[in-house]
Image (tube, rainbow, N blue to C red; front, side, top):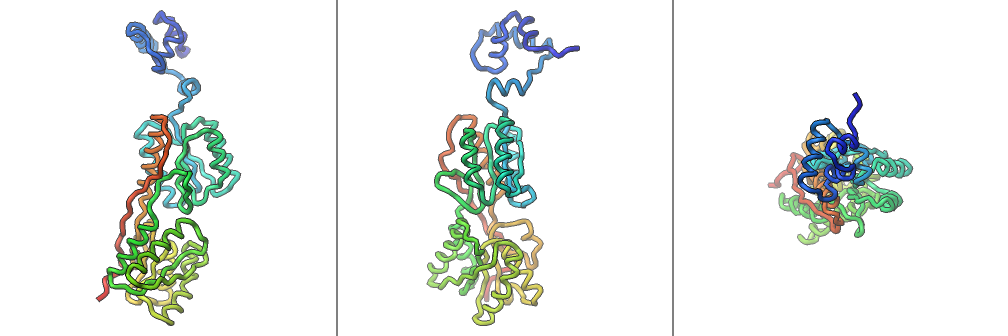
Length: 335
């Protein structure tokens, strides 16, 4: 048996096709009697409107695109989980597209999401290409950019105050009785990294202490391990109390180096990270770190985007979420 059409509904209800469309889409008011006739006809015929056709007419697909570098990266997966759960709560379907850091794939992914008529886009990146943002703007797609390393005054996002969070960690480490704290940073110069380093500097200088920085050859676990030799040499030359790392990956690399070279942590010197990555629970000793609320960042970003879409209003400010210090065994109160 053929599926009933909108024409069949109009015929049974004794109204025009346009009246049926108005009742279904709530686009324009109709008389209570006409609305009742249309709804009765829909129920009798078991009519189910074509959602794609409706989206073309209404220019609404009830879908949001998520453009992500790689779902295999832990913090990105957490952001996606937060965004997806809130999106479903507000009855949005999620279209996910991974770019793996390839510029051409980024552009193709935006084209794909536009063809699928997504109403908005959440971008989860470590370094988004400016051309990608230009392309999104050309398509007039509302978007929220979640970039771990960069920020811009004309791009609105959901993030944390990196400088304040790192200064808070520095103060915590000083309150443990540490006085000489060395800061291990990446050599890549990302904007967020500069903010973290400024927070460390501020915390040290506020106590009348001298900041000491060491550069690692990158930002990952391997870079932390490679920096271990320089850190060990620095300690033997002039002992320090604590090594404060720009991120958890560098801290994990240092802990691995210390384990391999029989350097006891926190007895020889203490170690702290930043990020709250999942592997913090399996490092030995368990790492003290600042937890970035990745799930909440994704969730708040999605809620902000749904407000934009439902109220036809621009996202005109960046949103900042709180952080917390997770205390592990890699630091301790000094006697």
